Each structure stands twice: as structure tokens, then as C-alpha cells.
Length: 78
Image (cartoon, rainbow, N blue to C red; front, top):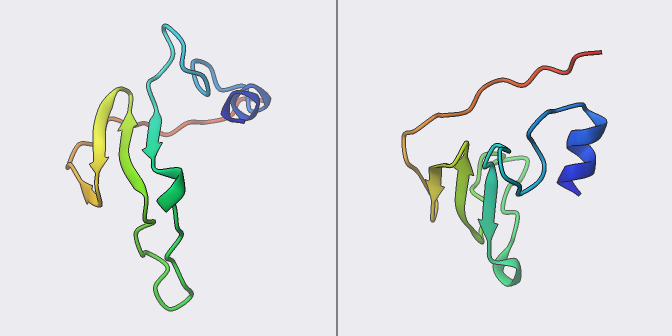
């Protein structure tokens, strides 16, 4: 799913778990994954997401941000 999207958007080193690719990963508990956002509370945290890694650095763990921001803006080149 992410590999095809990254390829379609011509994003290099994205979308796959592979050597020399950026380590952007979301670790979640599928059985407990639940979107809690509503129109009244659109920023509600999704339940079931345990960890988020950006460029191999942990940026989110069990409902809390770590304070790290190793990401960068991606631009699509035509």
C-alpha cells in the first residue's frame, strides 16, 4: 500500500522497509485501532497507535509526542 503510493508520487527511499530507505514506521495494535476524532474534537488521538518513527527516530509513543521532529517536507517533482 505505501510502496505503491510512494512510487506513484516519485518519492525516493520511501514506502518500503528496505535497506537505505527512510525508516518511517507506524506500529499499531490492529484489534484496538479506533479513530476517535469528531467534528467537535478533530484532534482527538487515535487509539491503538503505539509508536511512530520518522527517519528511524521515535516521535510518538502510547499517546505522547517525544519532542523530536526529524522529518522534512516532501515535495513532488513533475
